[in-house]
Length: 170
Image (cartoon, rainbow, N blue to C red; front, top):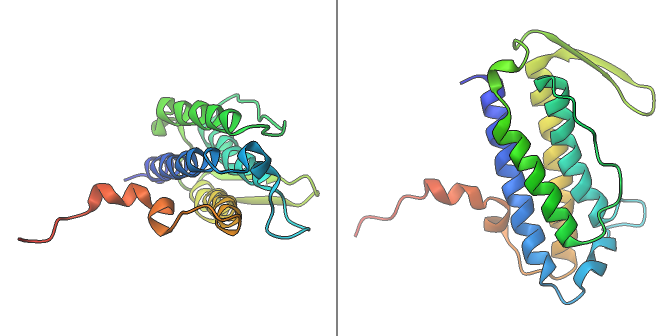
C-alpha cells in the first residue's frame, strides 16, 4: 500500500471520528456555546480545534495531492457549520486519487506562519507532520468535550475500529 493510500484512509477515519464527536456534542445542553470551551486559558477553543483538524487535512491534500484548495480560516460558529465543513473535506478525500501524489521520496517544503521552513520527503511530511497534527487537534477536541461532561469514551474516538471486530466464538 502506498503512503498516499494509507494517508487518505487515515484522514477519512479521523474525519469520521470528528463528525461523530461533533454530532454528539450538538446534543449537549450548552448547544453551540460549547464551541467556546477550552482546556486551558492559553489553548485554542473547541471551534478552533475542529477547524485545525480539518485544515491540516486540507493542507495535506494541497501539498501532496497538488489540489488548488482554499483553506477556510473563518471561525466555526455552529455544530451544523462544523458538520458541513467535515462533509466537504470527506468529499475531497473521496475524490482524491493517491496516484497523483508525489513519489514517496520527493521533497515537500513548507513554511509556517512564524517563518520556520521545513523540507522533507513526501512520506515523511505525511508521517511526521500532517498526520500527527490531525491527531493532535482531534484529541484536543475530544478532551475538551470530555472535560465539558460529554458522555464519550475511547470507542467514540476509535469507532472506525468496530468494522474489524470479531465476534467471540459461541
